[in-house]
Length: 493
Image (cartoon, helix red, strand yellow):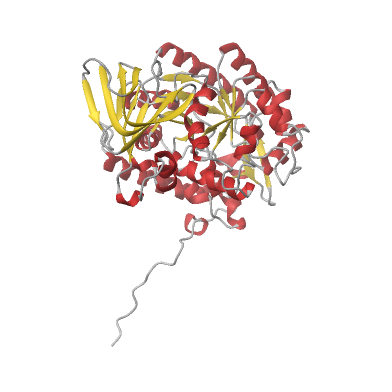
């Protein structure tokens, strides 16, 4: 089937880089783009005039929230409440459980994947919190999630998250990692089994990957076995690390080396490795405050940093800096990591944070961030046919309306959209030529019903924090309101 989109602005790809096309069109046949430009010859089977829209390559989110977000609960607590949002050691030893049933987890996954589609994301690699699970991510849950993703039509890089330990709050105060090494071994076995499951599907929209959790929660044994499996299976590995000072302290206590040295020692640095965040290297002001070779080592190993500017900022952290990582030769791609999964807002945040950090207005141009959301993501996945609109590329395409008066006046469409817009302006998307989003709706999905079900599950999740809190405080105490409730007093007179 041959389909044509027309729009006022198209981000085409030409001579190895993106190029702005005015009043252009994108044509694809089945799942492959066959024309980008003006005036395609020959008939088409379907066409859509998108008017004042910006058509982009499908956005690639490599730390994509596939959960009901916990950031709304844990990005603002006082220090005395913060430890209450972790597992207590007692909970780890005696009471850990799944807060949700498998059916409820399936609803949560559907809700999150629908959110990705509504925000213009076409390719994703998932991230979900394990705090409300009895351990990490079960094999069966990922099998179910895979089918939900296939039904929606998103391009997915999937695997069950696994870990050997969990961050815990200690009764005497402070934090540590409590280990259950057998669960780590079982988790890796499930991850390998899932690679086999995905291979059996033979679905070009689903790729199996290895997703160990956080470096401080993985034993050296599991790191080494993950690296060996990745090389044997030619599988991508994504490992959250270099993301915080506590992580660095815990890894140095456990292994006597830094997280980056641990990646090198276990062979993970020699794999196809994605590192979400990547904030804490030698140049971080609380480490050495200068470049002592960490960025060069990451670049030489071909590591991709999954930069999540909006989430990092919400937890009071920043990347030092986007431009300096690029200049070091590191491939930067983007993730959302929290709600909303809005890469447009995330790019805007990142652009302006870089200005503050480098004290220059051109520290991170809009085009560099949009390259990261498209071409950088494609490089991280080893996919030269994603992240670009040119003949021969996959037909992963998204359109955003840019004609609302609240968007302001229009100058350069990319710069203006990132400055004034939001991913909620996504109206249409296709993945491999198949419609995912149409007129800001997802065919076959009752959004209002899904919203109501998700709200009930969030309330269940919120209440469950009390049983994990080291002090067993009620949710009302852990999560006080911004303002007291309005009360009606006795009538006067």
